[in-house]
Length: 425
Image (tube, rainbow, N blue to C red; front, side):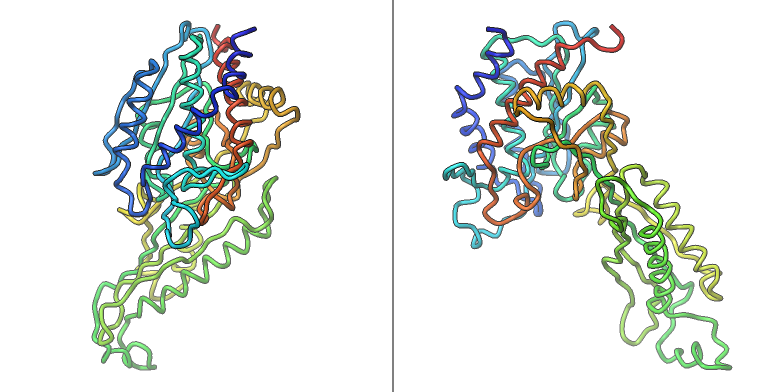
């Protein structure tokens, strides 16, 4: 029996270890929001990885949260492919009254596993760590480097994965284990932004008649009313995008600009002198954040310059951010798949070997941290069991058989990819 065959058989033979690990991960109440509650689970994973020969590194994040990186160096890393597996330990908020089970205890009923995070995405992390443990138990050494990131912040648009990649962590190929229902997925991107209008002066509302009446003589404006100019410009651009843009795997018109939140004004006795509009922008996988935000700014500024008051008081823009919770901004870059990349081909082969059929390539209707790999020019794919319908739902569930199938696919892929020669060899 080959090492690879032994590994695949071990996935089935020791599946209780997988369930026990998943149960333990679910027991950590890492809801986001409120967040700031992941140090304990990260320390647990650190201990587990250290026991099986991984070199670990902790990265300070927000107070109460922590990022974890781990690596099992290959025996011939200079000549063989490296692999990076990524997952997040934060989970969606829970309404306990709406659950028929304890959301933080794994419940196995028939083929279904219940618990917060089984689908999004502690199931994926448990698969990765389970495979790492089996490699150690079977004494299987990989020639290529095997790396793992356990991140925080995906649920609240926080920059966990971004932070680790900006620190220089990389690999020849990456798999992000977020929910994809066993499909190979890329994604469109999302960026939030604030558009601000500000008057150079604050006026009492007694001045309104002089502002709006013929002959009034006061050159001033109400910033809430002037924001209508901005919103109308955004609507025109959104309609234009919907008419002119397409991308395979997406229905027309998903590239949207949503005016999500508006704040402005001091008091009913004053003319609003500052108004801020918070928008959420979705764009296609072949587009990037910088180009999209520049296009929006050009559209809004053109409309403002056509307005006799705004042309002398142009709007300002603030894009993205590292946390929806802290600085009210987020960025999820897009990820465009490369079906011809050797890593994709190898994963496709492992899928066919285990599942007996070819995988489906597509695009996620949501976003995950996978876009940061595309942004950092690291070939990657989003691939995991579980459905989007279950990801944030009450009574979140996952097919146990699908989890096992995924684990065997990933075990075969890890073995094959890290045993394949790199392009420099």
